[in-house]
Length: 124
Image 1: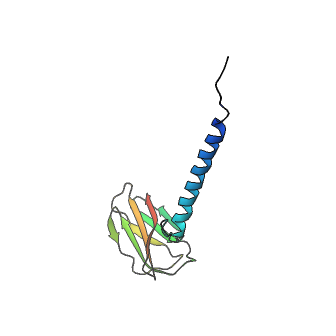
Image 2: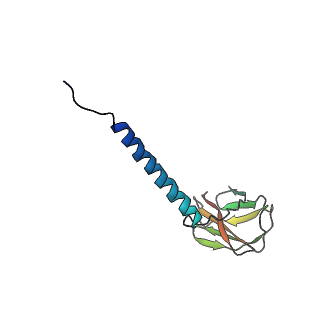
Image 3: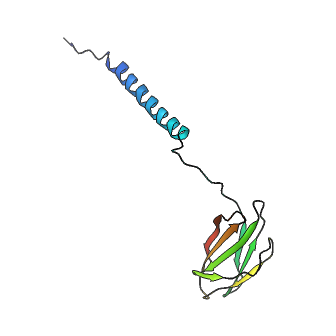
């Protein structure tokens, strides 16, 4: 004769799952309400064209900028700064590479509101 009674197991598991879901939802809502999730800054999109023209020259063109005007453009080739006298959208700049092989190129924008963002980080 079988005397086991499993009829109460299913409701208990259901109650435990419902309590767990409620606690998780309450924690997520509280994080957003009380600002614990932090603020997310807007990422500005600036299309850039980098192209190696020959063994020692790289062409840099900022295709367009629909966001806040760019105040300054910083370019680093193999961690050495490259000075650009002025900056114009759509104008090609020719950068002499430090070595004839592959070069690590980083292009950083500084906007008029003094925020910085890397817009290109590549090896050519």
